[in-house]
Image (tube, rainbow, N blue to C red; front, side):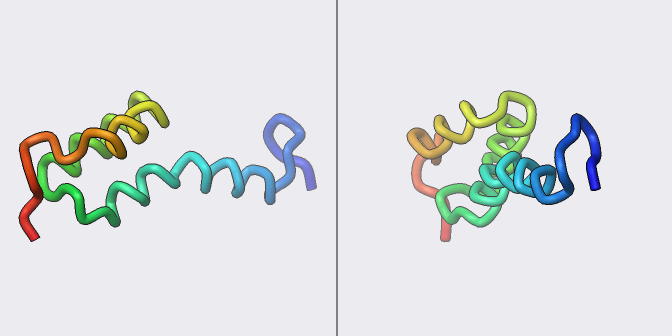
Length: 67
């Protein structure tokens, strides 16, 4: 079965997973919490993978996250 842009369902699921992967990694991370986690998630949604790379390098922005 062919779908959008002649890609199969499996290919579309794989692309969707790869697109959501940084979001999932941020949401499960213990590096940040609360508003900062929301900021990083929105940055990944609107700026894409570059924001996730910055998250991996810079988070937390305001010091250590509370555990």
